[in-house]
Image (tube, rainbow, N blue to C red; front, side):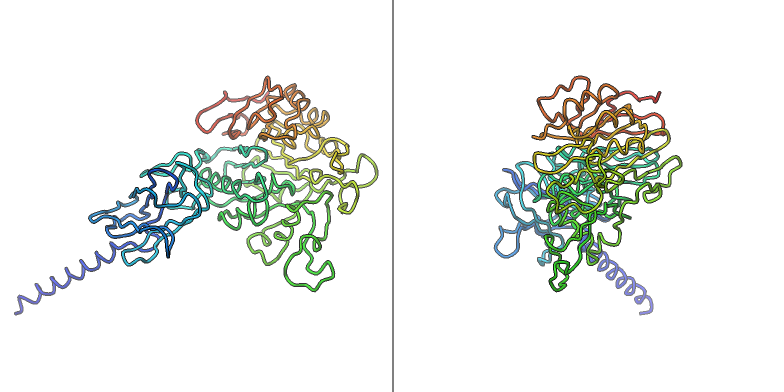
Length: 512
């Protein structure tokens, strides 16, 4: 009997070990995730991804669509395992809807382990996480990666130790990402094509994760309050980055257009912003719902993702945006039309002009930054105007560029104001800044962007790069049309490369 006790004890320990092994081999919620799926195809498929270092037996687990009345659940066949950090793909037909459906991963007991939904799907496109097991992209991929690692947006990652300027191809709008060698990042603007879309923000969020491998940006800058630069609250732009895409910031730099004052219209304060009657305007002319809804959102203390980190741009500051890199400086050259007079007279553009018959353009209040790393200076100024004129839509353009040209001084690289509009990039501004390279962000449009005179003015002094061939009537002789992001990289702060997302596009440029 004494000899049997150790044997019995050993058997008990073995049974306990096996029991623990079986328990540990059962995936918990989050261990296996829906990673990619194609719902609009003759052959639909759903890919699962194992986020752990252990293989799992997933026999009898279920892939389903919506609860209560959806399609017939699909059970994973017996003797099916998913390897550590590996994939399992199930294919089927006529299962998922092309619009408004859900994809779910269930345990054999029908506990929901993961679920996602979509509002629409394009034929043969996939919805995907990036990186594998990470955030869902807000945009579809035209290049599904069935049973393999998701490739994201096709952007190559930032190389640590290098300075990069990335002007994203967002068609008729603007969005830029600046990365210093330390990894310090500045996101300038988030374009949307219309008020009821968040596709622009979804694209920028996916790009940020692909490029920097993270969802955190040090500083976001809103050049001014137009849809093609900041998006629409409740749908896209910066609002979507903060509230839906999981992008975080240390600070958001905004201009001082105004604030929400609860009860400003004489009604009892109720904690709900009326965008038409409860905005106290500080520096504004033309109005839009983009601006009023932004101020209702951004100046409301209850909105914890924006209010605590929002700062008003400080004119002339070189410390509000403060990368830690040696030889780096970001100076706020202009904001809220400082020192600009309406048509060169005695009335400041700054201030509240919202009730006037001919108010200044919102463009006149754009933030201008001068970003320096080593010997490379980069100027970017939103939609800053460069002429005194009256719009056919009954508002005023004011010559901000001539006021700030000397404040900016010579630069190596110029991000062209207002997509190359005829109202910007005047001769004084171009001559004073004297860029070696000019970058234009634009797309198909009916505004005449870029203007031919502006193109001629810029090509006379600089190499001109455009994200797209925009107005088809223009003569683009001597320019470089990328149909892609414009990417500039420097390893030393003196020389820099123009590169595409696949290969080196031009030889290294040496400063004179």
